[in-house]
Image (cartoon, rainbow over all chains, first blue to last red; front, side, top):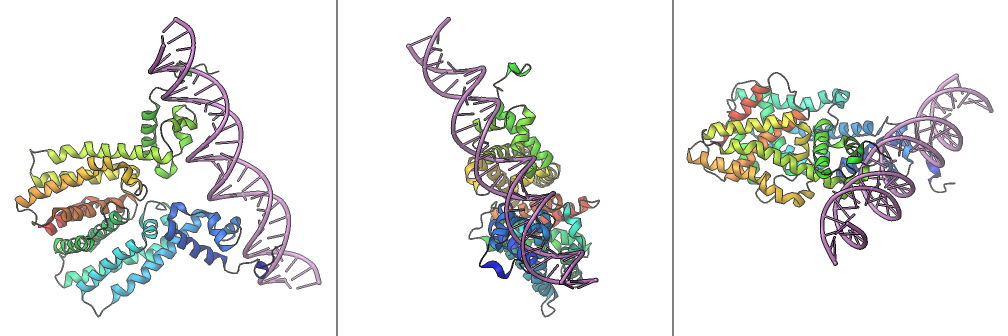
Length: 202
Length: 202
DNA sequence: CATTTAATGTTAACATTGTCAACATAATTT
DNA sequence: AAATTATGTTGACAATGTTAACATTAAATG
């Protein structure tokens, strides 16, 4: 009955197409707005095709989350590992990159670090170890280096990492959720937070 | 046809009952889980009765948000205004109370300071001025006092307030959303963040 | 007090969404 | 070539927010 699409009744790589379309739609409209029907419609397939590759909508979203973590990982790892820069520089570039990522991808950021899927976090914890935890461990590594250089106090780096993460994540969240006006003095606020953080950790 | 409920075909104060039931259900199950049908069912009324008091589900949720802000306001104002205590004491009690509120009412906290309803924030901004802004202004007042006492640096208190809020909100969010394990060393983490914050603001 | 009007509540129906079962078609294996 | 598996489609269902038409009570009005 279909004249044009005869080439691919089987899409070929529908699973990846679903993932990237879902990711794109999450970024565009946010998690709440996305719909299995619209995702499949964009791909020219039928609604139920999803269920050949994912158990449910939630399962698809979990895939998107994995993609998101991978994306962040790809972005941050080089910054963490850039041995040509001082600890302070790496730290500064990292916190800045984190904030910029949240601002540029607010919907994705909310999905990755928001409320939903925290019970299911176990399910993707293999990935947590590779990304989220890696991120934390990398930060801890950086802190150990900073402790050696007498830049920060020699206390449990896990706690220092939590302190930093809370600060940066808090600023990012307040900004993208509209509680702090993302106005002209954003740079000023960021710098104050960053400086205070360093000072406080010393 | 109804034998028992003949006393009140008209509920009497359905609007408030809807609000408090919705609030209760939000606290119990989170925003996503609540349903107009279940709310009305709990009250023994019909689904559509909601629409005599609220334009939509969103409108009802906005009412819940107002209630939530009022609740926080009631909790924090006495702490802010307790002139029998030092600035440091008031600050410590306030940040602690904020964190405890988030932990005790995670679903409500997410509703108040999360993603959704940020566009509609204008619609309840009369209340923002009375609560959220009041909260921020109270914090700023506290900071001005602290600046007088040479406890914190004499810079724009709005920026200092943002720094504090980011820290505390960030910790609260990471905790209730399951990104930091709410484990044994929570008190230790909190204290480190609080001390670092004070040190950084000095 | 009687009547009219407004307020409040109910029922039936609809569109949207995620999901599943039954069927269809293509790819792969035997 | 036949059989089996993988993948895609269609039709149906239940749950949900919403609206329209109707019912009942409260309030206002004479």
